[in-house]
Length: 247
Length: 321
Image (tube, rainbow over the protein chains, first blue to last red):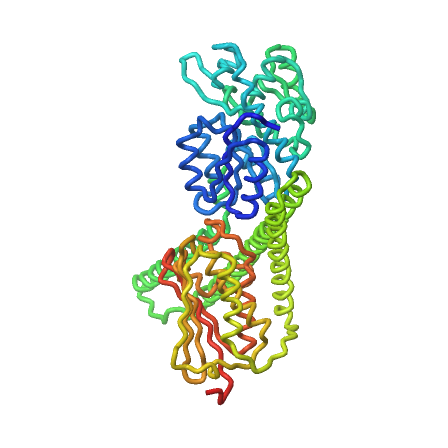
C-alpha cells in the first residue's frame, strides 16, 4: 500500500464505475481528482500536470474523447504516466492509444488488483529518470539522450522530449549496446511483464524511437531488428552488417 | 500512399467513368457531325444530290441507346455498392455499441464485487456497493431484454395480448422511474390537458410493451440532456386520438437524422462524437411497438443542441369520452 499522497487523476464518465474506482484509489492512499468529462479534465491537466502522479483515462468520453486528451496532454506533459481504460479490446485500438502516448492500456472489465498493481508500477517507473546523475549525456544515434531531463538533444542544441516509457526503453537499449533483446525481454524490463500487454506494444514503441533517433526511420541504422526475435541498439559494424543482411 | 488509395475510391472511379463516358460520346458525335459535313460538302462540290444516309443516323441512335444502358447499369451497380457499404458500417456500429454497453456494466459489477472481497467495509459502504451492483445487473438485463425484444419484433413474433387499458397510469410508472433514477439532476414538468377526464385516455394496448416505449423515450431524454436539463411532457386529446409529447432541451437531432434515428442500430454522428452510450435499439423497439398498436411516433427538433420532442399518437378506445 502506498503511503505518500500521490495525486491521481481519474477521467471516467460512468457514474458507478467512477465512484468505485475513487473509493479504491483512496483506500490505496492516493489523492484522487475525478472528472466526468474531457473538457474539465483537460483544464485541470493543463494547469496541474506538474503535480499529477498518474492519469487513469477512459477513452470514450463526452465532450473531448480520451484519444484527444492523450494527444493534447502529450504536447506539454510527456512525463505524466497515463493508463488508458476502454471497453475496446481490438489490437488496433490499443496501438492507436499507445501511439498517441498512453503508457498502459487496460480493457474493461478489468481485475481490480491488477489495475492497482499496474498503477503502482506505472508511477514507480515514471520516477526512474529522477535518480539519474545530473546532466548525464548518452549518445543515441547521432543525438544525445539526457535521462535526467528525459530529452533528446541534437548537435545544434535542439531538444525533443520523451515519455517515461520511451525514455526507459531507450535507456535499456543504450545501456546494452549490441545486445539483441527479445520482445518478451523488453516487456519484462520496461513494462514489468504485464501479461496482457502484447509484443506489438514493443514494436509500436521501437517505431516511435526510430522516428526520433534514426536519420531515416524507414531504413534504420541504429535500432535494428532481428526478424521474429527482437531488437538491438547497434554500434558494432559487424553486427549491423549481419542484421541488415538478415532483415 | 493516401493519394493513391483515394484514386481507387469507388466514388472516384464512378466519377472518372462518367467523365470518360461523356468525353467518348462528345468525341464520337463530333466525329459523326464532321464526317457528315465533309461528305455533304464533297457531294456539293461533285454536284451530286442525294438524301443523307439514314443508316448512319440509325447507328448513331443505336450507339447512344447502348451507351445509355451502360450508364444505367453502372449507376445501379454503384447504388448496390453504396448499400453494401452502409450495411458494413451498420455492422461496425452494432459491434461497437453492443461491446460498450455490455462491457461497461460488467466492469462496474466486477469492480464492486472485488471491492467487497478485498476491503473491510462499513455496513453503509457495503450496502452502497451492493445496491450499485444490483443497478448494473438491471442495466444488463434491460440491454439483453432489448436485444431479445427487438429480435422478436423483427421476426414478427409478437406475444402482445392487448386489452383495454388506461394509458396515463402506464406513463406515470415510467415517468416516476425516470425521476427516481436521476433524482434532482433534471427538472421534470408534466402538463395534462385539464379538461380531459381520465376516461378519455383509454386505449387498446399491451401494458408491458407500452411501458417499454415510454421507458425508452424518457431514457433518451435523460441521456441527451446535461445535469440541470429540462424534460417536460404534454398530454393532449385530439378527436379520436391522444397525443403525448416528450420535450427535452438536450443535444437535439439533425434534420436529416430525424427519421433514421428509429432505424435499428442507427447511431447519429453527433451521438458517436459525444460518446453517448446506447445500443441503437431503443427507438427501433418504440417504433415497432407503436406501429403494432396502430399509432405513430416521430421526432422533431429545431436543430443540434436545441433540444428535441418525441411525439407519440395513439387511437383512443371508441366511445371512451
